[in-house]
Length: 309
Image 1: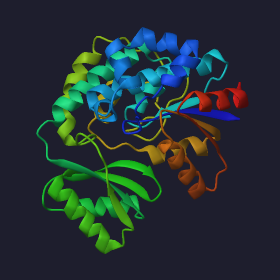
Image 2 (image 1 turned 45 degrees about the vertical axis):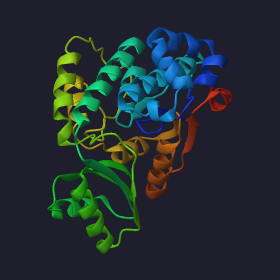
Image 3 (image 1 turned 135 degrees about the vertical axis):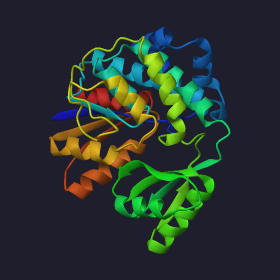
């Protein structure tokens, strides 16, 4: 039974996330207390969702949540055979694989969140989920748009892709896709043009910051966003993270690769079940049977421990 830890990305945060875990699991509490300041803990446990959803707050809080859950799972003998994540979640996968410790994980994502928020300032951009089209059709529509920059930035699962770019170009692309037979589009509540060329300043800052952080070799296979394939063991992981922040996330390809390699159990770590849905749709398209767990609080963590420990 091949297990994969999947780490959620920004957008799945919830008000009060992790509070029940903090109260129920000493290992989780110890981890969060070690890596997160009281200010961030207050935002995560007691703050308004609007404040938690600010990029510079979301990223360290999501990382601390993931580090705490990972610590509890490993403390109970649940160790993955591989790991992956979506966008911010890729850092969780790297932590699970031993590339960085919990403190470095949260420190890096804190810096990343601030750099991305700064790069997003003043940009009139939008992000839209496109349903019922192929990735090739969405890419074609983006190429046809003439009112500014727009690109396919999230390859989530079959029939669900996300575009991002200048507001006028996103609206134009939605219109083109509607004429092509799109079922519908959903505007996403995001605070910046993430995974686009507009994040280049953030990528440059992140690169300089990462120079001072030691990385260890992964202790398990990890699948990367930029390639949608396993890390080859040789290329520069820091350079990959800088590329990831300004390029598309190939999550559908990542899950497909894991499924083709025999993955049977996926454990989503994050306050939501978005990735679980992507896994199920990708598995269905490939004719694969999977078991998917979502850990978004104390009750669901207890369920996983009972089932797998």
